[in-house]
Length: 58
Image (tube, rainbow, N blue to C red; front, side):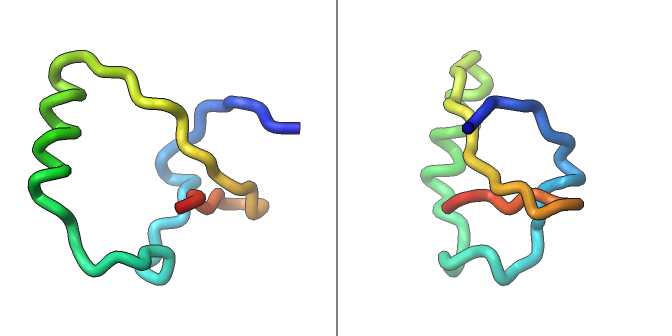
């Protein structure tokens, strides 16, 4: 069963092998940054529990 929990950033895996894209889309980053500054709420991300760390679903 799924549940929404708050995770510490330090528990998320951040090693480079997880990303299939080659870089950041600066236009998309600017759009998301502006939305966050305006108070937008984003849906929760999906992460899989790997024991000591969590892996984000892409």
